[in-house]
Length: 311
Image 1 (cartoon, rainbow, N blue to C red):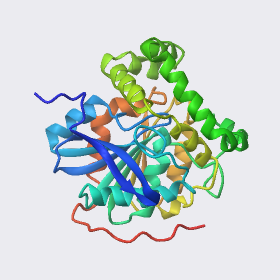
Image 2: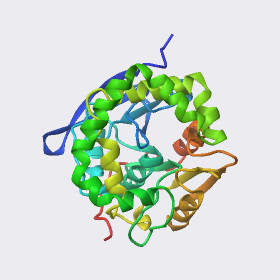
Image 3: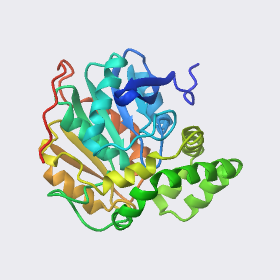
Image 4: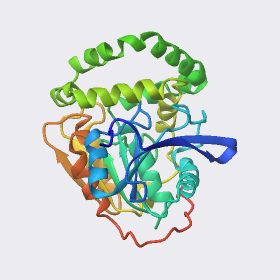
């Protein structure tokens, strides 16, 4: 019997600038591909067991990718979020993926949208789960916890590397207490997230992802925060792939209004409200998310060159 807790394949792929991106695969090795972009913080294994089981049952291939500075991905700060699509294209080429769908949780949402803008014809559909919205530019929306990152942006930019080293060392020190720490975090969360984190399989998935991803470095979350306060390098209007967005109406991390605002600016997007759920609610409906996103677009499409982002 297949062990859903373990990736079917893990490794690294060479990308631009003599760097590498690490990945983990679940499901069918030759199935239609879905790239799953982790949240902030998170790493390549932040994929619900329900999603892994669904992939096996339906012959799908789920690929989790470590952003630079987590897991075995070379530390790097992109120029902007759009810039990452150049690495994504190389990773897909190396893994033999022609067309793909992309899902992004929370801080992974902007990267999923960038893929929908940067790789038209190759990215057939995008799913966003409680995704972060722009803080600058014509698509920006104010408010929410993300404004704290905006206020601290100069400090984060200047101290990102030493802070990342300190965070990695701190996680190593408290590694034996990680389960207790996650329980304490869950205890102060809204009901939706608290209930999700109380489920043994979700707790195990988060702990495995955190401890595996942070073994060597923990710079990626800080890089994410820096990039969220910059211009993303593309506009909502540039996202040509169809987007389906799920957002808890009690989200305490990314306000529901942020998701509704960005959905209203995307060319082809629909919002699904997760009633009564908070920030992690999308993880609890993984089967619905995957089945919906995989039905988007024409899987017979071939790759196409990416346009320049609107500035």
